[in-house]
Amino acid sequence: MILPVSDETPICSAKGCRTGAVWVLAWNNPKLHTPDRRKTWLACEEHREHLSQFLGVRGFLKDVVTLEEWQRGAGSGSAADG
Ligand SMILES: [Zn+2]
Image 1 (cartoon, rainbow, N blue to C red):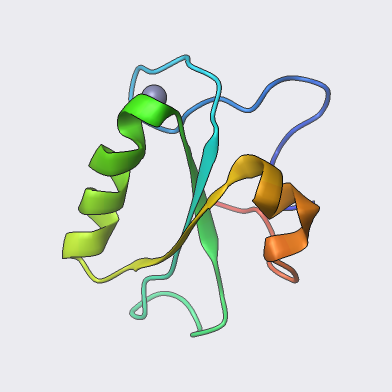
Image 2 (image 1 turned 180 degrees about the vertical axis):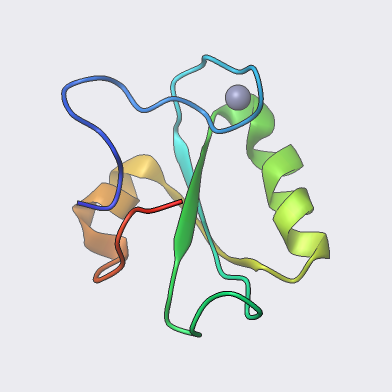
């Protein structure tokens, strides 16, 4: 599994936010990660734009998909670490 989820609702990655996530932001830092590696952040509706801008300005952002879509198998192969 990619997301550290058991039977709980995944929570938004924004600092201090406790809202259930609906978006998955897939990103990659070319200085730290191999090109096919994907790190993921979760975001609620409110923080999706903020978080994707944060990653976008750094050139890290690769994909923004709904959590549902992601869990259906949009991403494969990477481990959830960090
Ligand atoms: Zn949030």
